[in-house]
Amino acid sequence: MATTKQTVSVRLNPEAKQRIEKAAKLMKQSSGAFLGKAGEEAARAMLVGWAISRHRQGAASFSELAEQTGLAVEEIMEAAGSQGREAALEMFLASCRTVAETQDDPQFLRLGEEAAKAVSQGIASAGGISFPAN
Image 1 (cartoon, rainbow, N blue to C red):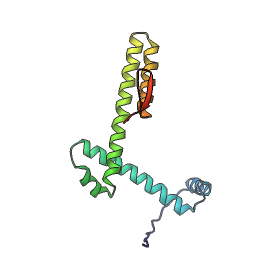
Image 2: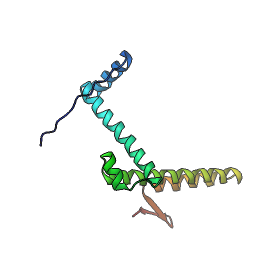
Image 3: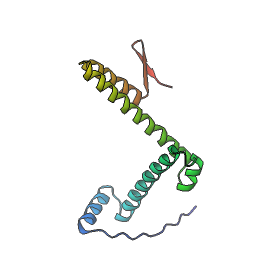
Image 4: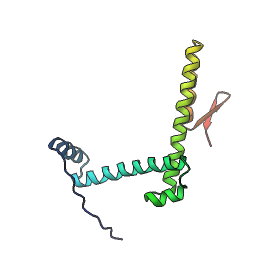
């Protein structure tokens, strides 16, 4: 299936143009291809963030947001899940820092950091035996 592309004109100052050309050359792309890919990635990231925010506000379902943004439902859901996980880990680590400082127990923070690392890598541990989490 042939795809049609549309042209978008971009005005850059000389310094930005030079950076774009250098980056494109490093990626072995034309400046246009580089900007197209960078623009698509930036737009996708912004739309995912916007969709997650709208969903958390209860303003729309994942399927409605997918229709509004042109993104896949799965992409939005996956991003929402990973953001929630990262935020939860940060809250956990902040709590560990507070406890470690108030109890003057740096070992507590170290253990909390190890636990957070294991969770982020998808590894669970029981009785000293590590195994992949389901």
